[in-house]
Amino acid sequence: MTTLAPTNTTTSTATRPLRVGVLGLQGAYTEHLYMLQRLGQTMPLEARIVKTAAELDPAQIDALIIPGGESTAMALVAERSGCLDALREFVHKQPTWGTCAGMILLSTTATQTKQGGQNLLGALDITVQRNAFGKQTESFIAPLTIDGIAPADQPFEGIFIRAPIVEVAGPHVQVIGKVDGDHGLQHGERIVAVRQGHLLGTSFHPELTKDLRVHAYFVQMVREALGL
Ligand SMILES: NC(=O)CC[C@H](N)C(=O)O
Image 1: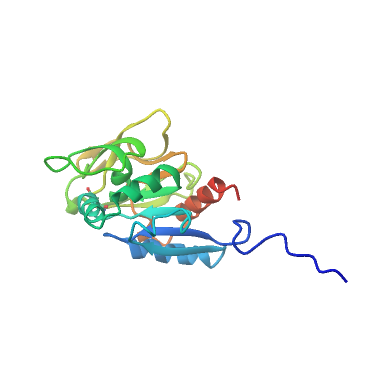
Image 2 (image 1 turned 45 degrees about the vertical axis):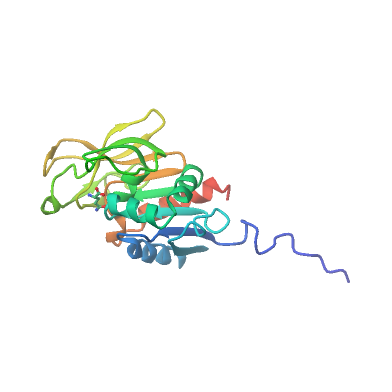
């Protein structure tokens, strides 16, 4: 009797789990890890914290989440630990989601920066205004409708903490979510969720809710980017 060799090896993308990294230099990274681990209970998905240039390698991880925190501090730690270039290279090619400070880092232009500016990764073609709603005390929660994620009758609980807004979205950027109403310094509709091909940006913090919908959407983006 002839035994046929399996056509799939354990290293092929068809059989191995998706590997999503969470940038663990500063900010709310463990919360993202827990969300991905919860998703991993229902699908082949492996989540890990990444901190070094060597770990920011498409041979190690398929995609990356850059968490919220403080974008100036995060960029500084990235620079000092020698992973800023690897980070820049990674996000230009591989699926990446930035939440709050992470979205600022992904952007091409930021306003209300410290004197002398701050390091940005320049991948997501948006102009963000940092701390647009005001101080920490202006933090708020608002229901959001997000295209492809949260319909109007099942809104997403948007948690905004010293959050940025997207002032200008480039021609290839899809605006997928806006917040409306009076919140701190802002009145009316403001852009708070965007997608540009392999990149996703949100001003708010889905990792601080129990709702896995944005994480599931991102994982689906990764699957599509890998052709799975
Ligand atoms: N919650 C957050 O990530 C806040 C972002 C922070 N205000 C910044 O400018 O980087």
